[in-house]
Each structure stands twice: as structure tokens, then as C-alpha cells.
Length: 88
Ligand SMILES: [Zn+2]
Image (tube, rainbow, N blue to C red; front, side, top):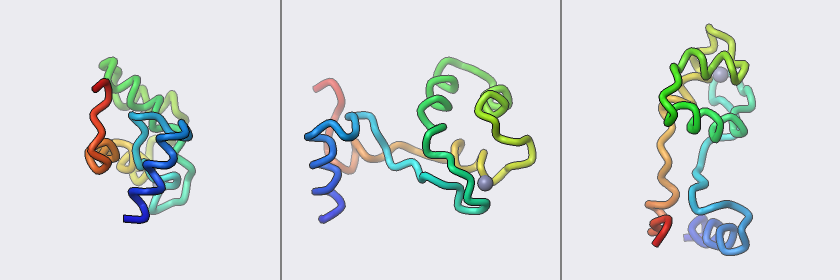
């Protein structure tokens, strides 16, 4: 319950947008900072860009499978958890 209140507060005062999610800040395996890459990754992925090209653009080395896993497997759930539907 406390987590929900914190995110409701952050959204109310525009610290995070309605489409913000809970992307982990760092890779669980190698500890590389990834949190700032999610928005760009999602934009390019939704535009149909090839995943390998996106990772090159973001500067993720080809053999950093752990970091690629973090971006590929992330699912935005914060709006569902909060019961907020953007645009309504
Ligand atoms: Zn990693």
C-alpha cells in the first residue's frame, strides 16, 4: 500500500508521467546503469527498428546479454497497478 501511495504522489505532482514505469535502474547481473535507456529503447522498438541496431545506438556491447535481457523483458505495469488508463 505504501508503494502505491508513493507513486500516486509522484504522478500527482508530475515527478513521473502517466506512462512512466518501473524499469530497474541497473542491470541485475552486471550493475550497468540502464534506467535512462528504456524510453529511447521503447521509442525505437515501437518505430520498428531492429533490436541489434537499437542496442548499438544505446551503447550496449554485443555480448552484454544480461543488459539486453533487462530491456527486452521489461513490461510496463505501473499504469495497470495504479488503475490509471492514460488519456481517460
Ligand atoms: Zn548487464
